[in-house]
Length: 154
Image (cartoon, rainbow, N blue to C red; front, side, top):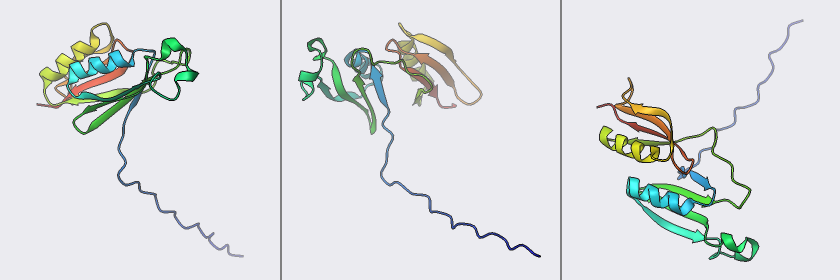
């Protein structure tokens, strides 16, 4: 007796999302304002929005000492956006398993930014030329944010 081939379920169309953009969000242990001010100084751009817990409807639900901490902030650099916030006391966990990659057009800029991030930070891989880029390095800044800094092959 011959077996008939099984019918396969029709393939489902892969959904497409239009207009989506990545906006990495960073969590901080009470120093979001200082971190975003530092990023603005190192990279240019601007902190385009910042809301403290005390200015929000959550003011009555957080410790008074936390009212000046950031509930939400937006840092813009050109058309790119980085958001961040201070997490409530006791809820912060250091970033693990991901990095923010910063690609810079000029090797000198990559060196300058890497050095700024490394000051009071932790160098994971010193910035240096590689076979794929004129500069590549990995550093955790003074706020604990892990960065990959890279510049194009020249």
